[in-house]
Structures are given as C-alpha cells and as structure tokens.
Image (cartoon, rainbow, N blue to C red; front, top):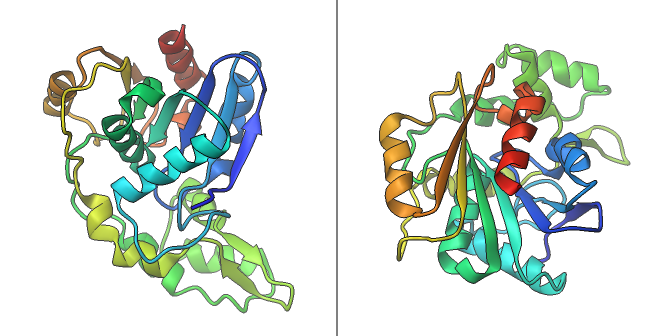
Length: 253
C-alpha cells in the first residue's frame, strides 16, 4: 500500500512520524517543522486515514508492513520511529518485525497492552453528521452537541473535506476503522525482547500509562528511557509542544 506522506527537511538522520486513531500527517506539522533543521522528517498517513488508500483489513502487522513498503520505496535504510497512540503500537510492531531498520523508537503515551473500547463517542458523532451542510460552521455546530471539548472537536473536523459538487465527505474510512476496532484496541505481541534504543513519553495528566505499563516496557525494551511531559494529557505534542520537543531532542541527542 502506497501511503501518503509529507517531508520536512533533507539532512541528518531520518525520522518517521506515525499519528494516532482518527489522525493524519497534518496533526504533526508543527513538530515536524521544528525538527527539520537537523533531521529529515516524514509524516505518514496510515491506511484508512488522511489521504492514504483505504482497505477493509487493518491490523498492526499490516500497518507495519505499509511502513516497511514506504521505506523501501523511499530507499530509507533505517529510521527513528515516533508513534503516538495507535501509531505508537504500529511503531512497536514495526520494530518487532524489522528491528534492524529502526535506529530509535519513540512511543508517545501508549502501552503495548489491550485498551478498553473508548471511542464510541467519536464514531457516533461522525456517523450522525449531516454532510450536506453548506458550511464548516454548520458541521462544527453539529459536532459541538456531542463533543464538548473544542480541541477534540477540531481534531475530528480535520477529517472533513469539501466535495466539488457541494457538501462534505470524510477523508478517513470510518466503516473499515469501526469494523477493525477490536484489532486496533488489541495489544502487541512481541516475538523477542528488543534492543533498539526506546523512549516512552507520557503526558503528565494522561491515564494511558501507569507504573505497571512502564515496568512492562522495561521488560520488553532492554535499552529504555522514560520522559514525562508536564501540563499535558494524551495529546502530548499538541498540549505542550515545547516540553514534547525537549523530550524528543534529548532522546535523539
């Protein structure tokens, strides 16, 4: 599968950034631009997201293979992987399958465990949208009735684009994501312990990572470091970009 991507910078080590569920490469524009002075940064749209192709099948193994195919086409011999949430699980699975292609791994606010279903609100909100609306303001008003956090609402709105014939459509493949949601919620199974230098970044106010998760990371990843970014929740890179970048740069250096 040929993934859509955006590239920032053309010198230094290669970094590949993988977004979370319902996200896309655009969510990482500011971070990628900040890193691009010293790094060649690629922001990918994972399958069924953004401008990448759609597929009825969506497992972590298949998404890891998509990243491997991307690296082959771009002739990238190895890369530092940064993955947030679902993208963090993809990055972990990729490292499990292709450890010699990963020079560093950054997992942002996600553990390799199974999580409880927690996205029903977003599925319902997108399902109930009247996409024949004449303006984004109308769509925003619709979403605001179910998604009260403005940051989350704007995040979902990124998935809309205007049709030439009028009205809007969703960029992501909502049907396939919902049908494969159980696989997305599943944990990652590792074949072996991993010696790739690995950094786990946690948002201070996030409940996604606990002390048991941190210990499990240390059991799986033998070269492990940990950063907690203050004044940030699950969307660490958006809620405290300066703190997040400091953690990234400290790990890479």
